[in-house]
Image 1 (cartoon, helix red, strand yellow):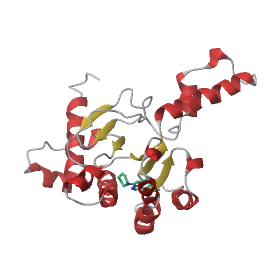
Image 2: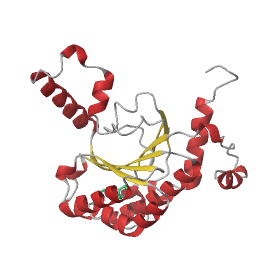
Image 3: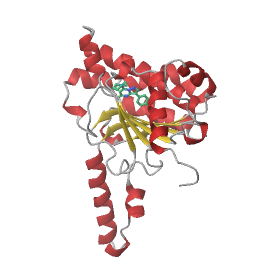
Length: 252
Ligand code: V0D
C-alpha cells in the first residue's frame, strides 16, 4: 500500500520509506488554523473548517501508510477561554465531520475514539461522538483517537486523585503505586505511547499535551499551517522518524 506514496515522493528528494519501521502511534498537534485563515484574509472559522478537511486527508494517508493509532489534538481544556462564538462553532465540527465521513471510516474499518473529559461537552457534540464510538467499537483497523477537552495536567491530577481514593479505601497501599498503576488511570490507557509527535505551524512546545505519554517519543515540527498539511508532509515526518530510529546491523 505504501508503494504509491513512494513513487510520488522519490522525485522530491525524500528517502523511500521502509515498511518495517512505520510509527505505530502518531500524535498530532494541529496548530495554525486561525493563522492560516488570517493570512488568507478569511475568518477564523474558515481555518477550522479547512483544518477538518486535513483531518480526513491525514487519517486516510496514515492508514494507507500502515499507522495503527492516530491521535489528533482537536480541543484543549484551555480552549474554553476562547470567544463563545468560536467555541460554539468548534463544538459543531465533530457532528459535521462525522455526518460526512463516518460511513467511509466504517468502510475502512477505522475505530473512532475520544480521549478527554466528556462531562463538559455540549449534549449534541457528545451524542455524535458516542454514536461514532459505538458504531466503530468492533473495528480492527486504524484507531482514530480525538483528544478533545483534553489537558495533560488535569489528566495527571485526576489520576493522582483516583489512586489516593483507592488508598483511602484500603484497596491499595502506597507501596503498590507503580508506573503501570498510573498508566491504567490515564485517559490513554487504551493506547500505546506515541512513537512520533507532529506539531504544525512553527510552535516548538508541548502545550500540556500527553506529557507522560510523550516521554520517549520522537518530536517533529514543521512551519506548515495545519490546513496545508498534506500526505507529502506526513511522509516526510515518517521518513525523518525512520532516519532517527534506524537500527544498524544487529545493534538493537
Ligand atoms: C478544529 C483542526 C474534527 C483543529 C481540525 C471540537 C481545530 C478541525 C473533529 C472531530 C476540529 C472530533 C471528534 C470526532 C470527530 C471529529 C474536530 C474539534 C475541532 C473540536 F469524533 N476536526 N475537529 N473537533 N477542528
